[in-house]
Image (cartoon, rainbow, N blue to C red; front, top):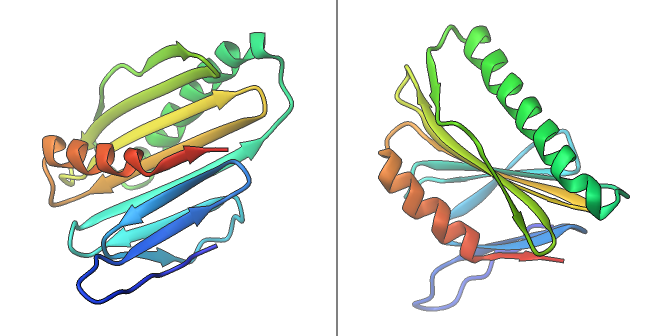
Length: 159
């Protein structure tokens, strides 16, 4: 569900509203068309940054979240490498981290490619869902994208 709110003197915002999470987006984020109903894509012209989120509802045991998170890392890195090969890019990705937290496990990595694209990823694995948040920009430095990413995460509410 995409909602735009405008008020005199206020910053426009959008809301990503899914069964797995909600995320408030401050600023000029505009929703882009995607085919997968579990995936949402947005672009901010003022930040020159893209945001892609997705989720998967599941029914796993709490003891399985670490194994699922490790598979998620494998899946994500294979996807990054496939994209690099398809577009003939050289890609550098820091070693992904996997950490436990109260509801499951989190996965994170960041990197850049030979087209000057910077990207950051966060995956959250819980027994009942997996949430993916990915940002990218060709004009921002990694430090600038980190600030944007961290501001986006502030608007994340996991259901």
